[in-house]
Image 1 (cartoon, rainbow, N blue to C red):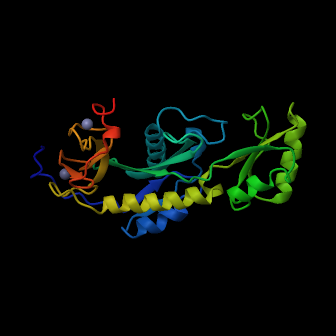
Image 2 (cartoon, rainbow, N blue to C red; image 1 turned 180 degrees about the vertical axis):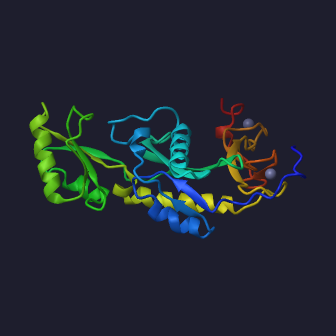
Image 3 (cartoon, rainbow, N blue to C red; image 1 turned 90 degrees about the vertical axis):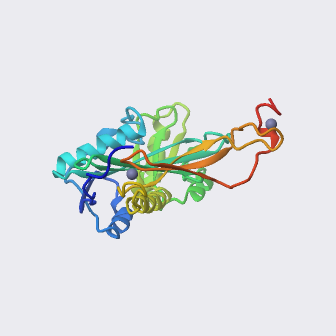
Length: 287
Ligand SMILES: [Zn+2]
Ligand SMILES: [Zn+2]
């Protein structure tokens, strides 16, 4: 444990830089205003330089690396010493075959006071899908399912996904033109149509980012019970729920771990006190 007795009270910054070109500030601004934090958008910063969803510029490193790079750039561009950055990653569900899942991350950095807070949210029902079609009529069911035109799409020639014909499509006429152009360019005479995952094109993402913002704001306003530093909250889950037959730790979650972003303070809370695991999950009873 650090000696916190000499630590001066940490006061949250009032102005926080946020690098976004994708309208995320619309859902985050009101959330942070409730903590008297104002989000400041740098003018003319190209956040797509940190990687995009549209394959033109793949992201380097982890989500956290990318979020830190965005936060740094936002502080640089605004001269502020605190920043907020958002990252999302969409792909196959980690455990359920044929399902998609999204991960959203929000990073808060206070460079002057030397701490950061990371909040994550898994979206089990993301709007993240694609189809192949040679006309809008053929894509009708797909378009209905993803919520076009509120949800935007990207169109590419099938087999040439790295060179999209058009992005951010939200009008029927634009969609028709893009599908025709893609079919022309495709050896298979098919267009590849996929959900545009940029937040301002994806209402579902925007909603999840707003909820995640609420989660981060709650953490920022929760002081550590040991040192009073803001940012106390759940940081991970630990497995090891005991087997009901033999008591061995299983792979099922047992504790939620709460921790401080500044001192070593940590608390384990049992998820459901007294509960035990079905022996089917036990490495000894059901190897
Ligand atoms: Zn067992
Ligand atoms: Zn603490």
